[in-house]
Length: 121
Image 1 (cartoon, rainbow, N blue to C red):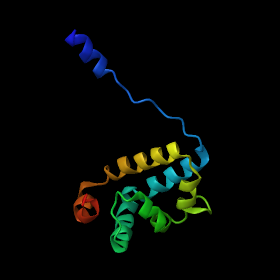
Image 2: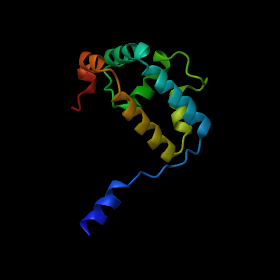
Image 3: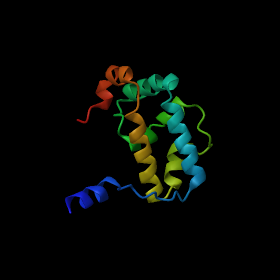
């Protein structure tokens, strides 16, 4: 019985949730990816540091237009905040999850240099 339970637990995979507003989601995801590219990440982190915004404060980042500043221009005239607002609640949750996973992939050197931004408190 234990072997079966282990097999079931080992095969769990999170269900994919369909993105409803694909165009807006894709544009916002692209802006996040560009801001966190190795050649752009330091600029993005400096912007957050100057604005005193923590790296995990996605709403604060959007409100301060930090993505737009980091990746001029965002692919939409509406900007990152409006793209985010146009998304459904589940799409917003998925883009936040994407952002949070991407910031954890930032180069260790930059994470150390901007460790204040990465602190939880």
